[in-house]
Image 1 (spheres, helix red, strand yellow):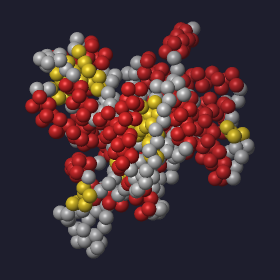
Image 2 (image 1 turned 90 degrees about the vertical axis):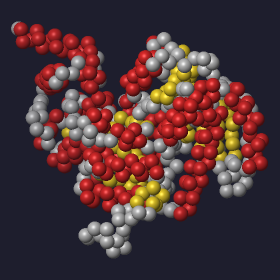
Image 3 (image 1 turned 180 degrees about the vertical axis):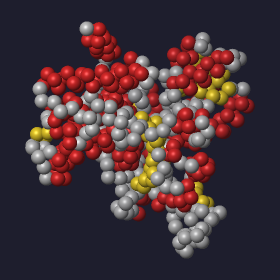
Image 4 (image 1 turned 120 degrees about the horizontal axis):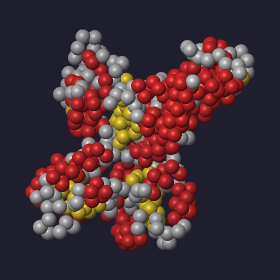
Length: 535
């Protein structure tokens, strides 16, 4: 496998970038393009053919040599991001050029429609006008991961008499089911050029910020990293993998999940993996600040704007977070009137202080989080649909603790070690306590588990914490001595919880998924307890 390096000088010539081509054909095309970049002194590029047998060794060597960024295509991007969590990964996404090339491949005389990926959302308005002039039907998406919306768009195209569809990878089966032909939109040369200059801009901004702000001001720092988020279940592996990939992007991220699942920790971890990690990280809870104060907190104000305002005015969080990340927690509770202002900032990347007409440009990445169902809030007219589309660009759902019960033992042990160090104790959790913890629903999630373990570390005098000790810190906790009785009570409690979920209208499949057990286990437990009642 050939490798091409361009050594250049100048401000941007110090950047070291690896490009992993997904095909030999594209590798050859990039290789031919590289001599032209040498004259412009853009960067030092390490080009690798991703189809070669020793590609893993080549990538490992390239990363160890010290890469400012790695540009690659999916699906290898996810694997590389998981292998090198601290490496800046930039995923090549389809460009407008790639999209138009696909449209031109539609046979003449055939009706054509396009389902445009969310990565091109900034071009929706212009593309809609252009496609209308070309006689091409345009279908807009709220999210590439919304299977229901994708199916609805494909079905709508079929009902409209569309014969050919240009779609993203993964949608082909839906198109076939509707009896239409398709062209898969893949990121090619146009996507690479777009990604390359995006990388240069991001690296340059990061370097400038590093010179201006060698350290973040007090109270503006992200302390958590991805390694601080504990969990080895498949669900948490997917969350961490998505976080690594999304960190390389500049797009808005929406984190969903119940209260106490660690959404802000994840937001800080993403910030610390991004090119903005040298910039500030600010957070605000949109539900904890009154509507009258939230506007001034976010956008700032000029002197004399309202009673009690500082004479010299004050900058808002958007200005303070310039060059970094702003975390909007509980975004679902933001007052409806203020949602319009936030939407305007996301669209224009400018803010106006309260009492001022002057537009102030800001360079801020938004990460929002909510424990609410925003789609339902949109239907109930409590949340703006257009704002939801702007926020739900990159989605991450953090699962509740009860859905990843396999993580409970390791989470509990790590928390106990933390409190042992904090209070100077030497406790350890008995296996009976860990088993019991895995049967509980934990509505407060990791936060509730942490509170429980902290109380145990304070009130228990012995070194080993056993099941009877839970009576000190948990209501209705079992006080069990005999192991056979303990196991029987645990089974009873699990069955009672299953019956409670069944009465709430949940199916057997949903219950099994939530408790991380098989459907056959639930059926056996039901049969066993029915036989016990009959006898």
